[in-house]
Image (cartoon, rainbow over all chains, first blue to last red; front, top):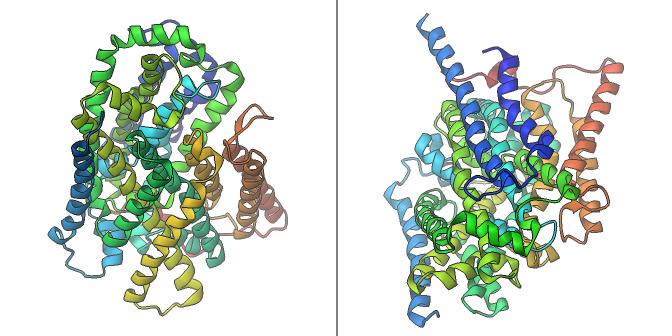
Length: 69
Length: 499
């Protein structure tokens, strides 16, 4: 897969956790009573997992194609 | 209140789990009796599921169950919501693992490495640099082991045992288990331990929020106690992000994490786990919030923050479940402490003793030496369980270890991507990084790892930055002198996947 795309997908969590700290250090809007600060990071657990999985699936399907060819 | 019967139940569970793990060795006895190689990597046959439990289980130690809720139940800007740095940390671990660990696995499989120092030795053609990396690994494990021992101490203290007695029992449990099981059982005990912890954690994080009227009620009440329970103060933004990022960079440089990862069946297993393991953090987050719930339930910060989770469980659940949950925490601390001590002893035996003192030592002599070293390491860890951080926010013990191990990042992670790195700039960077870390920690009297005079920056990250600058300058000088060349004996193609 394109190394730039791979880099961006894997680097996004760092950008949103570190550089994005001012985005999420707030209490509102709450979700089910949970402050934004908390649920933003909870959501990122899933996004980060999805991003890494995406890279994994693309890379492993590319490898399979190479093998069958 | 806890009766003698509950106490008996508590110790019975601990002993049964540890004994079962020990017996499991005989059940899956390796064909090759070289117990050392067998133990250390389990013959490199762990598949996705076992790896998921083994590596994920590393997240469920005294760190998660005692230290993080304890941090959440601490007053001030460094407590409350600040404890959530552990979640940001969890989010940032795995993309790094995804790009680094498969490479390290491939080269280790090809060349039979079992430690990061083995790799460093060949990549830089320098057994001296390898020894520095090995010793840094051991140094970094000490405060992490200390955190486990301290965690056990606080659980026992919640059972109203005197604090000194608690510390002694905690030490004996860790040392005894490691010594008896030797270099054998912990990998399998880790799976049994995880099963118990999962049950305890799931019951705790479902029942307590219900009992306290749901998250709306919990955070509503928390807001009346302190704003720090809902959100971090902007003053500590830099501390929060650097601590999370630094911890993520550090985790898979720890000797025990590398040993665990190299035990995978293939590099695909590692990639798959790097994609799935983050989901473990969902539970971690709710465990962290237990600290907030403790403050809400008692309507005050606990006197000893590290007792937040044990005390809350003790007050809310019947004594028999409490005994089970406490035993889970204790087992969940003993097993990782033991794995960490064994990884350290392996490093000392393999990359120091064999390399420098007696290259012809028999397997038997090596195993015996490791046995002794394991006890030495655990005693060394005790020293860290007496530093001020151990009686305050014990989460800082782990971050002290992280600050040490992070200084090996150029030698291990960067060296995976370029063959041009030379041993001298890397060693100089290491020296500057580690010295900076130790000086700054000493300035804080080992109470914390956030440097309050400079935006509360995490000392490890600050030192790593200096470390990288020194490496960069060193390499620039070498380039200027036309001395830059391919180093070491490992060809870059050896990082490719093994088909």
